Image (cartoon, rainbow, N blue to C red; front, top):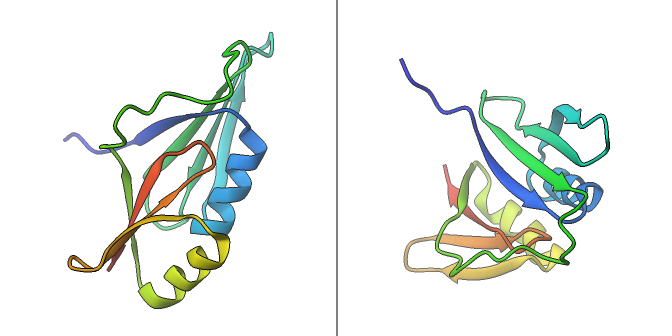
Length: 121
């Protein structure tokens, strides 16, 4: 059997990203791994309900202030029970970047510009 394990997003500021994912989506840190020489830090976040993980990777020697995300055609999606309440929270956070009212979904941006789709469960 083959199952999903995780998806990786590279981030510029690990603590800012962890705080965003906690506030916006309720994700918590599951584990972390750091290079002995400090060249990278990997933090896995989970939702506390499934085994799927979001892996955030910070690279010390990246040397740029952002990542090139191409045409933003890829994204991560989260299903939510109370769509209206979650959307209100994201609106207050000013992180909604696109709404598709016809399909009944919207997208938020994380601090590094990754798109995250929010869908009603």
